[in-house]
Length: 418
Image (cartoon, rainbow, N blue to C red; front, side):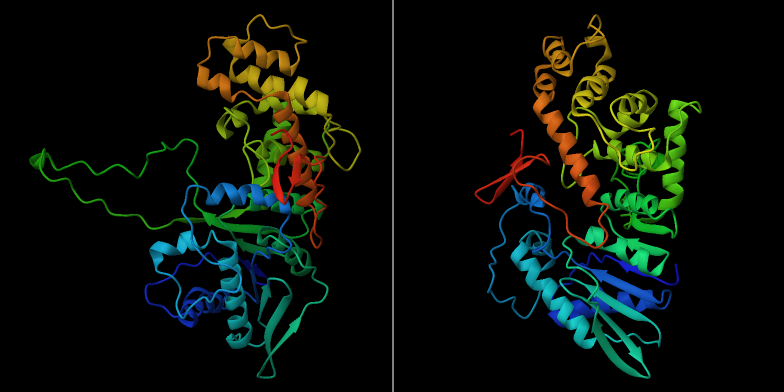
């Protein structure tokens, strides 16, 4: 990990800071600390001009019902960042965020200098620029071979391939899946570690750590003891180890007699994870990650029956009809087993959903059951995501007429089934 580090920084602002103080506090100090441990630090930002147009669905969802921060292209940022209570809302305004990112990049490229020879900062925004010190002199150069990419989430891949083992700082769970695909594609030639918010164990109660401490026995009924606020906790995930653990679980779920190429196992893991939702596809209604994990032994064989997994083909292909009438049908039959007793074994997905809507399920649950069009659209979304996340230094094709499960009309994006 000492050769390379990718740093996706999520800064906070302090009351009364100037913009220069903000950049020094939120970026320069942290980059300097990282460069004491690593030879190279990469700071990557979203370049909205290249972000896939399909991302706008997620963007609209994020900003809905959260108020409006007024800022347009050409407006002045002012001498100071907004106060902390406005900061999070301001970050939802892409025009404002773009202006801030541009200011941060200019400041870093004009003022930051690594303290040691042979260490360097790479700023990956629109262009990719390297800043280093050679013979006591600060210099920077544009890395012309680096394509103009959009999302910061995918930019770390090219630095792993270029420089080797890499530590990625990101709170977005999609990064774990992107890293798994890259590790598989590069045949584990380097290791990827992700520093992220610590996750709760599946055995840990959801409310753990939130309860107030019990009052002393002599003070029952008196003032409650103050609760100490826990700071933000982080963990470092070894993605290689995590992927190998998940691969073993998938193989165990089907037994040793089923021969599965390792790359197909990885693709199956990512597909199942995407069923819980991402920036580009919706979560399966009424089915959460715990259920999918607990039913792994049932769902993996159904996915194998619906795809070319187990063949020598390099890419995972899923048959749309079998996706519906074998895999998706089984997902909901397992979830609502007592409500589909007596259903024909060869019933289609549509017939299964009709049977559930005629069952004793609550009306609200029935309303959430997916239509075949939505389930089919989800498959197209997922297959597009898989192709997008395999691109290290290129932008994806974004067909706007439904091939990927998205439609773009009058500049607005929607899912193809809506």
